[in-house]
Length: 110
Image 1 (cartoon, rainbow, N blue to C red):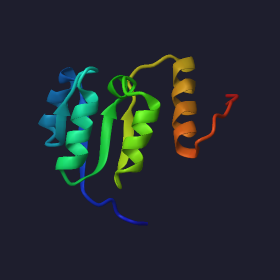
Image 2: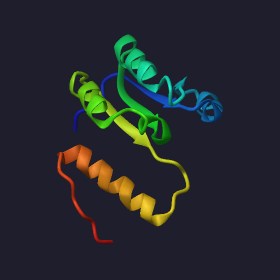
Image 3: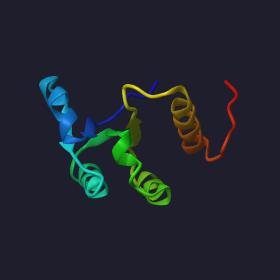
Image 4: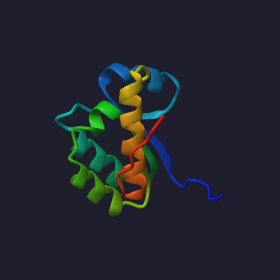
């Protein structure tokens, strides 16, 4: 298995920042208004190999724009799901992850 090259960096809202920083992890604060700028700064100005973005923030970037950012960057981008979510929302999240990974919409029957 190939090892991940580069840093693991988290992008979260300010509320979640303290936990990541206390654990000694690389973390950047963002809001829904500036998430795209923060994401671009992180992938262009660091040696990030994996960027994990709080799901509530990444939703504010249009899907086409997010795809374009991912395609021109060699690292991996993941959404950090909220800790508590109802079952239907969890299913929607899984479907979105699969759709992004394979580029095809699927219906899941759980």
